[in-house]
Length: 71
Image (tube, rainbow, N blue to C red; front, side, top):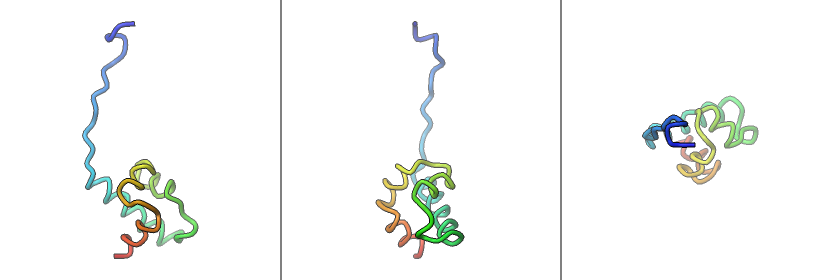
């Protein structure tokens, strides 16, 4: 196989600030509607349309995300 067999993947630029804000807004919504103990980081990430890995990268933990969502 040569390089022309597969289409080129052009990497997209990530906007860290926008991703972080999407996660924070999704968390606020989830915590308000379902409650802290009933929602997981994967649920919040899915609601934001992002990966749970990014949630951990930006906030460190669900508890720290909750703390920031309250402020």
